[in-house]
Length: 52
Image (tube, rainbow, N blue to C red):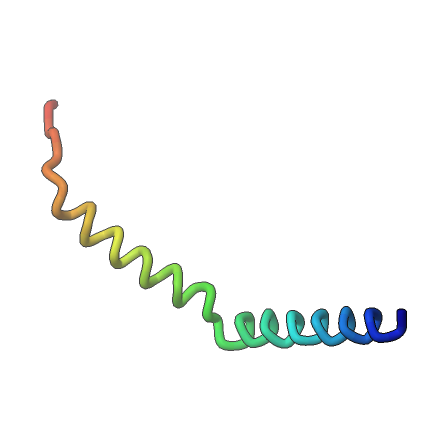
């Protein structure tokens, strides 16, 4: 039972370090910017229906 508890604590510590690194280096917004640029390129290539 103690081994399981230690493993759970190690997993939680690793997850905390990973999420802290993502927050500290602002990696979530960097990923969103890359996705936004890719979607922007795709959207710009789509022919638009401009009926007014």
